[in-house]
Image (tube, rainbow, N blue to C red; front, side):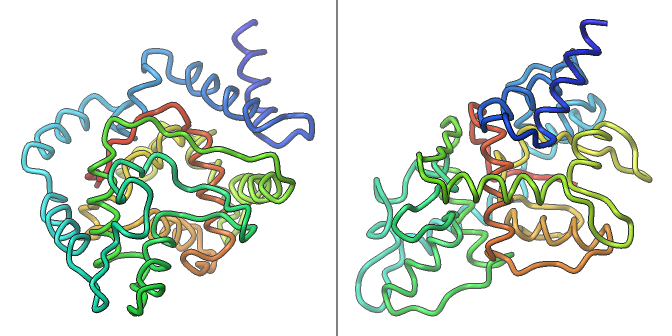
Amino acid sequence: MKRMVTVFLGAALVAGLAWATPEDDRQAFVEYFQNRFPDVAVADYINGVYAIDPGAYEQWVQIEEFAPYELAIAEGKELFETPFANGKTYADCFPNGGIGIRQNYPYFDTATGQVKTLELEINECREKNGEKPLGYKKGPIASISAYMAFTSRGQVLDVKIPDDPRAMAAYEHGKEFYYSKRGQLNFSCADCHVSNSGMMIRADRLSPALGHPTHFPVYRSKWNDMGTLHRRFDGCNKQVRAVPLKAQGEEYRDLEYFVTYMSNGLVINGPGARK
């Protein structure tokens, strides 16, 4: 009975009760998955579905020996270090020269009143230096982000919500999006990755939401390519037959803010490889 009450309380907190703080939400989120998969260590959720599927984990370990994202890391490093026409580089735009900072994204920028993601700031850096922006879902921006994530491996996710009502509104907006049903199939993000996590959908096992942002951008076998988190958001919307939203639009940035905060305390292990 105690375990049932705990699970119910965790589900209630993350469902959006007005009195729950973001940290209440995060702790309940973690507790929910601890109860759902009691044999899985919290730290292992950085491995996504492979944390809960031993057979798939063994296959994934073998894939990691010759990781398909290594070319993207190399390309991203070259792009990151190549000067713009004005002689500056991406390193001039970021704290610590852009090295080892992935764990601090996304963050709420009190100056502009919006959530800033790493990919958004990569393009802002380009435009500030007279370069054209890149596409947000794949291609060079995924490679640059992959390289920056690689330099941050082992760093602990530390997304903060400042004492600013606009920041809380962005967090709540992302949380609402996560739990709202949409599309012809009437599914929410949480339907697949919280309440049905671990279940099979055709030939695939649904991954747990905890740890999702830690390994992006990812190389997906389905794509035969690298993709950003917002590319994955788009794919999820399409799968439930909803209209995809604009990559790096407010909805997706706020969604990223919420789901990443839920994984605070886990370490960065991106870029990753997934089916």
